[in-house]
Image (cartoon, rainbow, N blue to C red; front, side, top):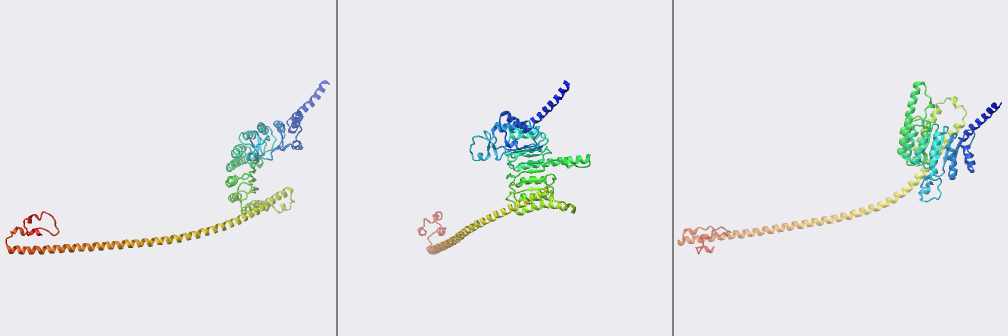
Length: 502
């Protein structure tokens, strides 16, 4: 009897131990136990979140104190029950020298006395999240919103993501991971085929970040091709449930992505049949990006939603064309249905989808209206600016014409002066040449007259000498030339007194 009673007592004890062990790994029981042991009041945001058969944690921690975070981390470190975890901050924070401070305070160069979370606690928070993702085998959704995950912090979290086997949705909105963080994250995410939703809203991404996301889509597409080929060879039929990968992509509020960032995505999505939704609101897109998207939608009929709202540089025509492309797919699918399917009653899900589609169209029309109003205002302003510029240009043109006429008059005067100077120079040269010619003519005439006179005297003397007969014959020869003043010819007649006269 005693042995039976001992066995019967041992069984409840074993059950209680197992129950206590399970409760010890349950987040809410663990959290309440820690609050009781340390004599703290549990946070109502955490206590109210528990639902039957759906354990989850979704809280905003802007008002939590340091001991509140410590209790939450201690409960999370050994948890194996939460399938939905969401830690959010309403403001966007930056990691400073002392801890987490709001990004607006950093921009205004202000100092805050007490940071939200000190540096040691934030490091402990990231380490705990990595351990939670590594050890929890039931978590499907993880949201970390508003925390600055850069550098070492993000690498620590990635080590936990690399070993998770159940996570299907990852939300890192407003975590400011940047392009380098996006590359490191995508390098591990591409090996997680069960992950079908990635939210990188407002994470300061650029074209390089889009390239990293495009590489993930391309890699997983090749993996799906290989898996489908293997299934078709082994089983003869492809099971789409086993084909996994990213289906929902949120990249909104990253204005630096631009047209060429979207081009990186559309080039990969042209031949992809798995991605269903892409959200790129407020990403600095223009009509060029709309053209890229239209070309992608012409080839890809599996995309259900491509959200491009809040991109004010996209024209109304481009928005309308994209909406037509997205609506044409749904209309084609509905037109292929038979008459029997049309008689089916509308379900709540279909009505909800239709309402979402109408809301999207309404938002697009509102955006078009605001764009048109802004463009009209800009055109009016441009018209006024153009009128002012035209008046200024007309005044400048009148001044230029006036200066041109003055320059032409000055040029004519200068030409007249130059022609007068040339005429005066020519007349002066002519008078000088004529004077020189007359002087030369007079000189020649005087020389000829002197020559004729000398010849006459010589003939007269010769006749006188012949008459006298006393003058020897040698002195009759006169070798003096007209105009010659040399001394050699006069030596023969120096002794003759008659010839010395000449």
